[in-house]
Length: 319
Ligand code: HEM
Ligand SMILES: *[C@@H]1O[C@H](CO)[C@@H](O)[C@H](O)[C@H]1NC(C)=O
Ligand SMILES: *[C@@H]1O[C@H](CO)[C@@H](O)[C@H](O)[C@H]1NC(C)=O
Ligand SMILES: *[C@@H]1O[C@H](CO)[C@@H](O)[C@H](O)[C@H]1NC(C)=O
Ligand SMILES: *[C@@H]1O[C@H](CO)[C@@H](O)[C@H](O)[C@H]1NC(C)=O
Ligand SMILES: *[C@@H]1O[C@H](CO)[C@@H](O)[C@H](O)[C@H]1NC(C)=O
Ligand SMILES: *[C@@H]1O[C@H](CO)[C@@H](O)[C@H](O)[C@H]1NC(C)=O
Ligand SMILES: *[C@@H]1O[C@H](CO)[C@@H](O)[C@H](O)[C@H]1NC(C)=O
Ligand SMILES: *[C@@H]1O[C@H](CO)[C@@H](O)[C@H](O)[C@H]1NC(C)=O
Ligand SMILES: *[C@@H]1O[C@H](CO)[C@@H](O)[C@H](O)[C@H]1NC(C)=O
Image (cartoon, rainbow, N blue to C red; front, side, top):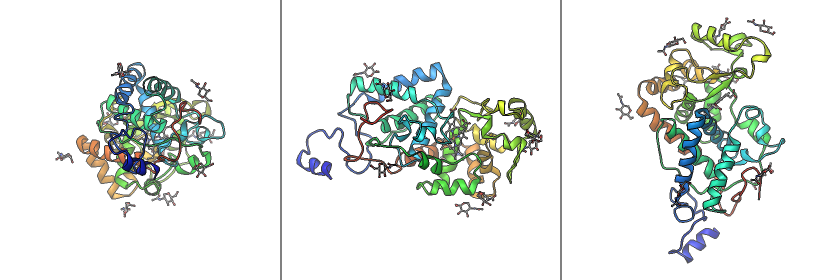
């Protein structure tokens, strides 16, 4: 409201950090025109030194946006906050990278760019840097003043979810079955801990489940049936683990999906999900189009906008 009045009164002036309802690709056009270049350069360095870190940053975007919207709540440091929720603790990584890039942004555009927008832009740049599609990111989100561990525990889907539970989880966030299947394609990069899928190897088993027997043997070798193997890491995509392509869907059809929540898309009994898996496995162009749609939809999840929230200077704590 305050922004609208300002808009009417100063039509010709720059509206730098004013939110006018919808997010906009030109939100920082005057207040931080070099933003995309700053993040692009930083992400190139991240990929050059550790490609998997870009996978971790894409996941960080999901775990932020899926809990009370893309508001950087996951970045707030604190044992009682989202970082220590079950799906995040000892698993989500990349907080330091986000803080370091934020410092680069602050050096050129002090106090202008929210951590929430930064994270969305980093995720897009990482997808592109790993070989995936490119798209224009919408901006204008603000940073939360708090974070909720219980909301993270309730909202983030565990790897034991079947296709109907996944559909329901995404639907509760305004995301379609197509968004859910396409966005799961982010598992074309990155790694999983053995603990996230060991029940598929040794029980307790879930149904329906199936795995390529050769792959099952290979995973048992990487994740022996002892708790000390829980933190071993396995590639989520067997064919091109650090390339953002459609090979994840080829994996699912070959019975080499790693998580139960991956393979269930192909064999869980929902024919709409199954046909999307077949489509994406054979048509990368179509996967990329639907993935971008999903990322934009997820990025629009209940954004916090002015006058609510703030622009954090240090993403790890409120100002
Ligand atoms: C559909 C529901 C989803 C479930 C149940 C799920 C679950 C998981 C699990 C269990 C892991 C491994 C964590 C670990 O063992 O430490 C993982 C990794 C990952 N997830 Fe998801 N995920 C889902 C959707 C998504 C979405 C929508 C994205 C992004 C658009 C995403 C991106 C990633 C990436 C890139 C990794 C690898 C991270 C790394 O290497 O650090 N996931 N996911
Ligand atoms: C934009 O940022 C990049 C990366 O930090 C820097 O190399 C470049 O000089 C900046 N350009 C302008 C016009 O400030
Ligand atoms: C966090 O802040 C929002 C908006 O300011 C408020 O609605 C919500 O109740 C707060 N949540 C917690 C867990 O304090
Ligand atoms: C999927 O999971 C839900 C909740 O865990 C369960 O009630 C349902 O029976 C499962 N559906 C199938 C087809 O296995
Ligand atoms: C795996 O280990 C558990 C607990 O030690 C044991 O109960 C189970 O029989 C083992 N399963 C297999 C297939 O070896
Ligand atoms: C993996 O192999 C074990 C036998 O070693 C079997 O009990 C289990 O069902 C297999 N897992 C899947 C998902 O097929
Ligand atoms: C299917 O999985 C098996 C076992 O991991 C592997 O040897 C084979 O190359 C895979 N085939 C395709 C087409 O991905
Ligand atoms: C698949 O899920 C969609 C969305 O929930 C639902 O409309 C459809 O009936 C499901 N199809 C099957 C075969 O279960
Ligand atoms: C792949 O998908 C694109 C985008 O939907 C479409 O234009 C194209 O015709 C599809 N290609 C094939 C071979 O079906
Ligand atoms: C940012 O905040 C965190 C958490 O309070 C703190 O540990 C860190 O030192 C701060 N970073 C900078 C550059 O001030």
